[in-house]
Image (tube, rainbow, N blue to C red; front, side, top):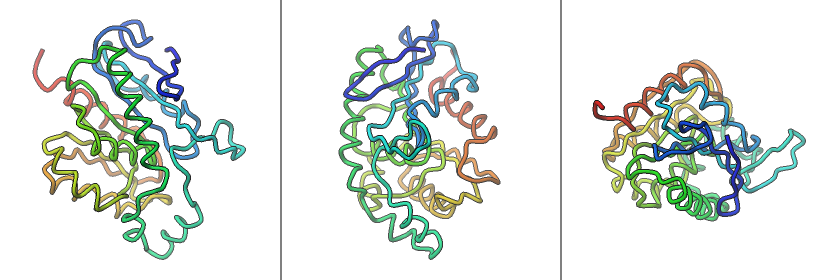
Length: 241
């Protein structure tokens, strides 16, 4: 793998025939969650059985949290106490209507990262998969709905619904886009019921969803990796070759 600096963000690039991101194959971009180190998801590519030509790009979020857990980072700041209270009082619907103050700048920076990555890595048209875990899944969704970049798929691991009115207005513009979504039924951080609601909105707008629910918490278990692997293969290689 190799490390680059794109649009102000440190990114890790791997895969490709030399495992350094070379070639002109598809690109999978995965965004880590709140409080994780920038390289949190990098190890996943070793568990995904996809053709060698597929490249992976893992950006590190711009904000340093200084939480005492190593290199903890975030795409935007969260009020964890408020999230915990919403969970306890069943107020997720109210939170889903809000647009986090740090979301637009995070989206703009990632748009710049994607534009540079597509150009410098010579990614073929409609060979880009965008995804993420938790806060990274929220940003990936928002990115997909605010850009006209041709996507092969959107992968949402333990994400949730935010910016509801904006998202519902924009979802039909992505009609036909393949979506992979996973969530733990016992997730203590992001409500399973809100993940189901997000799935319903996505499907209603005409985007087919490959859904994997699992008995577990805020995590990426093996059945999710297997589901994501099948999704990447089907989305990037929809026709026999």
